[in-house]
Length: 540
Image 1 (cartoon, one colour):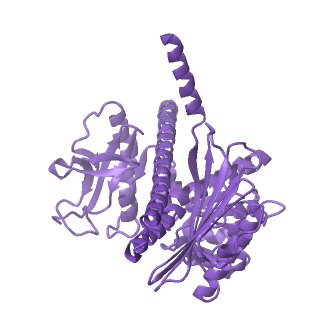
Image 2 (cartoon, rainbow, N blue to C red):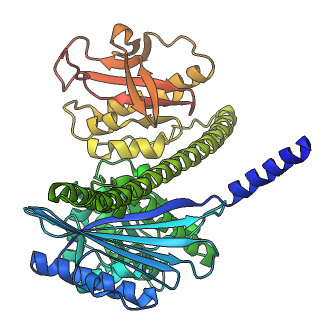
């Protein structure tokens, strides 16, 4: 009898686990309404939301909805709700609609829209798309609801200084390319830019290899999509260098914060060889859609950039409850008001727990990818090292044909091209070589070659003797001693405990070279923390 009870308990546990429904947040959008006067824009956008909702609700929304007040409407298995919150300086209208998936049983999509206007701001819009499901594997092609296209087309939407478009921007003039360059370098830009280039060598030099129309529609409000005909790719290369450009049919992601000195590997590049097939083209669009949707979740903050429906409803119920107490409402009405607020708070708590679980899932997936990449990198590094040693046996040294950089403007790109896998510039070093006072570019490059070759070999062989090693006449490798310091690189803490130096104790920045670095055992490469001058500290 006890055994049967145990089995029944296990069976119920399995049923509960398989039927557990979780909410997955798919994307968030925070934008401003661009056209018309403030109140007029907000009212027009609200009517677009309600028109969209009525088409999907299976009936006619109540008059209270169209008058801009709070409402709740149930029809055809769908729930549509609105809440209006007015205070002395703020007017907020929040909307939520549940819509069962047409193909996947048990999956329900929820669209939330919040329109708000404060005393000193224009009307703002935020949108959330979530899905509730018991599926073990939740895999979708992210796409903002058609409602956003509707509002963007009829009311106008902008994210930051840039208008939201549901069609790609096709570069057609030198004026366009200048605007694009300014947009890429704009430090205020918050959305990624996807640039699909044409290939001047092809029969159709103006046509990209991916469906940019589909991509622009699927990432409206999440990214800017640009078509760059082949003839204009040269302008981008002239401005940022080939390492940071996109051409010959490739597609590139330019994340916010991009600049002429940015690490090119932080801005993902899809080469033409990867996307020239039908499968490769579709896979590229799929990955870009995922990137845009996921970026929206981490870029925006709930109840700050994006207001949730439950948060607006809870605050509205709080005001209603306090008003009832002040007006002397009956205890029954006060109790009902308190119960509604409690239910709303419970909804907020559930949303917070679901988002916490989703963040945990994101973190685990990122850790798994990082471990896989690290293992692959270690294997590739060993393979490259073995091949390099084989070449050296036949008298071919890896750096024999390296051309030295002639200016600091080329230095970072030179490192990325010639020292990849052996030596890498950390962000501070990359900034340091953009416009330094130290004048001998060739000397700095030769020192990095020594670090990438001789110093790295000794490190890989167990260290050897590198203290006070002569790099070349007047230049030596020394321990930092008490001046060692920690810095962060690729999510880990490293210690810069060595530096290459010349110039003795001079403080003349044009003649004093300092290259501070650490050894990264994980990637088996030298990480340059800072260069080419004395590191600035609180003491200096």
